[in-house]
Image 1 (tube, rainbow, N blue to C red):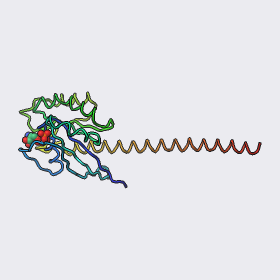
Image 2: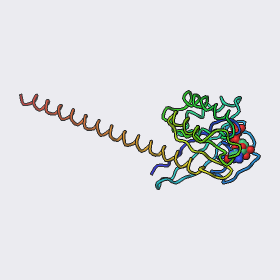
Image 3: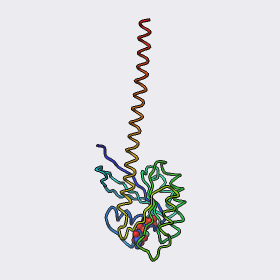
Image 4: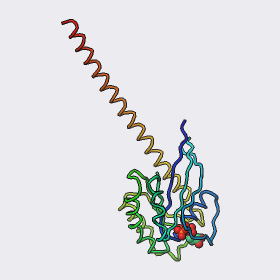
Length: 205
Ligand code: GTP
């Protein structure tokens, strides 16, 4: 059985909680004094879904605007993109349209996406409702979850769902390729049959 390695990329405004979500998922830890990213970094975690082991290479990017361009080459190889905003920061939510444009411009057309509204533990400071998050996700046709890296809410589920969707895409691609190959074999066999009928007719005439 072949080894599966999926590249995932985190994007979103600075301070939305990208690094914290990755650290919660990969190392099961959380720090309230996380340092802002200044480049690109990655973590590895192996996940098992429906009996298939998948190695996730999880790329973390810097949310600060001056570092955006550094990440563009990483969009291309990403099989999944996790777009994060902070439910206590409206600007990070409003900037989602810019992030979506970046994905359209720099990522593969086939990339799977998920939108996360992070810091849902901070109910008293919330300024973006769950309904608003759901609406923007619906508008872009992507799945949505509210998460908390701090309280470990929906973190595993977000990775699980995204990985499962990528696995399904691959399975579907392989099936389509097999069906196309079968069609081609049928077409070639029919053509060979026609040729041999023609040559036998030729020889005996
Ligand atoms: P950049 O590296 O600048 O792009 O930021 P980032 O998106 O990686 O954010 P980071 O993970 O550094 O988190 C920013 C701050 O928010 C840190 O102080 C975290 O502790 C805090 N934080 C992250 N996730 C949560 C969360 O789910 N709940 C709460 N209460 N705080 C969080």
